[in-house]
Length: 323
Image 1: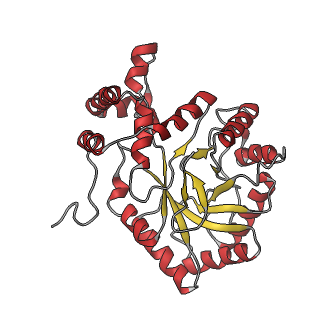
Image 2: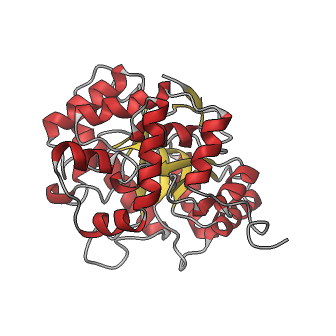
């Protein structure tokens, strides 16, 4: 396994993040345990979840599964850099969501109970809260840090100017502020190259890409259709038809490189500026194994240029659209 620092922090994390959103929704608890054990065995020390995850197991269900896994002992919690998120409404009552000081306190304590731990290594704002001032947010986080319940903070789905505003407010308090930002980022979705990545680089914020395979479109979708006669449907089918030409070129190029399309997509992300680690969210052990395999894929300058040709990206703003 390869390791790096999370943003400008001194925290060492694996270059792949184990995403747990499927635990309790698509993946049963016993299989979730096996996947987490296998992730540790492979050297993945960075696990990501959120208080709203759970699907059919209910809100908070995923954190509960992880907590029961931690309770099994064997150094599981000690060996894990644990990241969770808050923002979404967790109850049908005022102050049950978002980033007020009250909800930060309530949500954090609830997550700690479900996770069966005394602290969260990385506490992330799942979305920007336009109604709560940063002075209030950072004061609440400062209290949590002082109490030893939170070590680092991060964001998710923020715009570049949100990152800048958050950091400026943190600096006025002599506070560390954000060390990471989770954004959708992959070969097909490169909008964050305009302003989010430049803002992250300037402020020492590590990028944690989610949806690295764009819902499976970059995971060999056409090859799977041919091999299994399985057909896509719904929004995935619409997206595939909109990008079919690019996907065909991409899968052919992956064949030329001798790698699976999904491995190439992850390897490309690992070569991008400011990227700390993409999130892989396996439903099965096989999917975990394929994600780990991407660490061995080497992309030279010519391969990277070809991928940019197939999936054109962005220059930083304003150069992308102005002189």
